[in-house]
Amino acid sequence: MPTLTDAERSRNYRAKYRTYPGYKTAKDAVNRLPHNVCKRAYSNIIRRTSGLDPHAMQSFGLPVGFTRDEFLAWTMDSIAFWRLYHQWTQHNYERAFAPSIDRISDFLGYTPDNVQWIVWSENNNKYRPRHKLPGVKSARRVAQVITQVKNQVTADFDRLLEVCHARTLVA
Image (cartoon, rainbow, N blue to C red):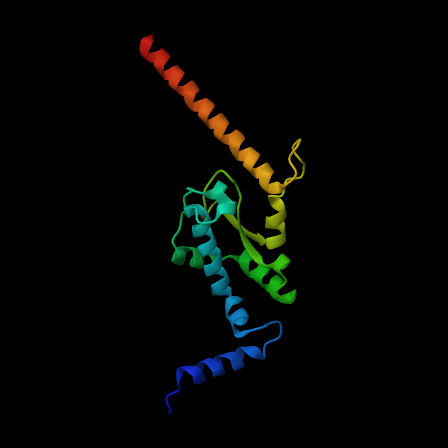
């Protein structure tokens, strides 16, 4: 069997995936494989929780309750993922129908009992504010205002705990 050069291997690979409908490039074909969708979702989780994504600072510091291999195993066993993946393929890989990982409770981390697979459009619309704050025009600014309020409430609560603790020591 003749040994192929890297260029020949690359050309054969591109030709193999170029024939599938809905794929623009070979990279699209590979990125849309189920296990690669899951790997990308896990990478996004890590990026959000480690602070590398400036648009997802509300997730910074939240715990991730599984390793990549555990996440892949959980996903491959998930009926919801396969249903959504099939729906995505039926809609010719439109972004709105792409499988997306969602935290059920925003205050808890990415743990197996707090995440679910939903379509991207539903997950995207879930965090869009349904109302406007007075004088605030953008969704990003609404998120900033909410974060500031959360931080202020947390600081006030911490001060209250300190006062209560000091009073119990004096009494």
